[in-house]
Amino acid sequence: MRTVLAPRGRAAMIGPPCCRRACLAGILMMLVAAAPAADPAAAITVGGDVRKPLVVDVGALRALPADAQVSFRSSREVDGQTQVSLVKGVRLSALLKEAALAENDRFDWRKTVVVAIARDGYRAVFSWPELFNTDAGAQVMVGYERDGAPLADGPLVVLAPGDIRLGPRHVKWLQRIEVRTLRE
Image (cartoon, rainbow, N blue to C red; front, side, top):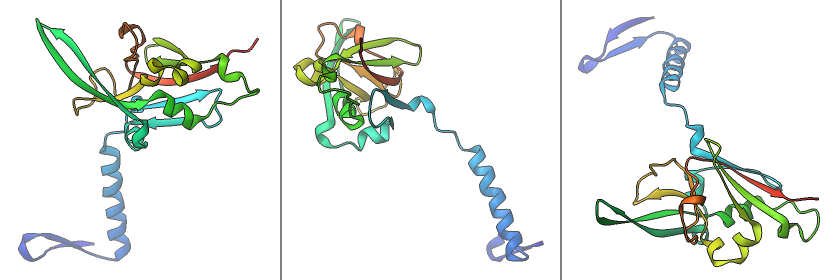
């Protein structure tokens, strides 16, 4: 294979097409190797006692139907000034409906808990009846955006805006959601 100068000063390779394909394949492999790898922390798993385990990332959450999307305004005081921000996400109950509870009997939903687990092991627990039968539970969300930008405390978080104190069940750097039916 030899290189010649093409019009406008560009180099062009002359040679058999198989050599050009091999060269292009090599360049493509170098580009793929240099591309940043997908961050596994940007996706969460929903598993445990479910019929359809899920792996979802921010894109999959954004793609869920409008009735699954939820937002809330949070306000906090910083240096004597009140800052208000808009947090967007998806109802936790919508993800759980998608995964579907694996019931052995018709009353399993009454004794099922949902555990949100952070990368560092922090956990927050919700009951299935709370999430599906209370106003506060309907507000529990997997958040992915604050004021139009990615979250500072992880790509995905669990928030419970209906709680009197928001901190104890705020799970930063969410890694997985486990559904467990308590059996005797």
